[in-house]
Length: 233
Image (cartoon, rainbow, N blue to C red; front, side, top):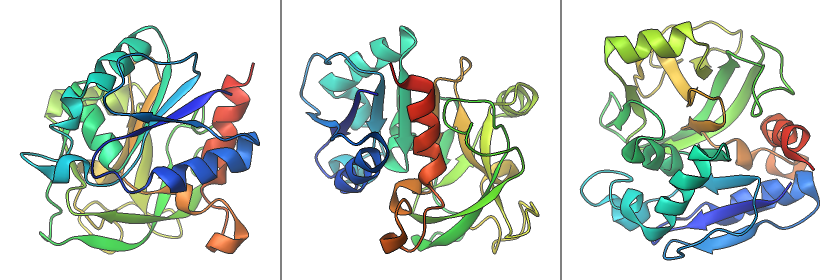
């Protein structure tokens, strides 16, 4: 699997992502600067977490207009696979590659803590190593992770199986009104979504930070193993 991680000014999770990708592929992914105007031959592009352009205007708003994003958009439109985590998810919504928006957390505070996610669709390139309903632990760290969308978009996401992950309790319980379960207040407790073709995924928590026992666990590793299985040539 040929993967690349995009680096914007203010990105700070690119090395975490590269470590996770190398752990499952055995090879280091490419690191692409935001000013690049072409992509190498790739199977996967990853937009990692951080504070691109200092979150000026809106989180991800300026990064969405970086030269590299024209290429990422074209890559996605050709059927390429794209993963956006945290700020990467925000960038994907700002570019229109994913619907909805990420607003300030419900409590108006930056959150840095573990959470639990429930797998809502295990038949995707990002989730196939889990079973539907599986619950896993993963860190989150964001101030603008409150996912919102209009009712029509939500109906489409829910009806078409495009909700990949939902915030949940350790036992799999979902309660969007409970801040101990849904810490940022996301509508329907949505933590990650998919594009219409299932090849673009955005999520707020950081599975790349749990891929090795030395990190405290391997809960996030199945996401990367799923991608390897789906995209290895």
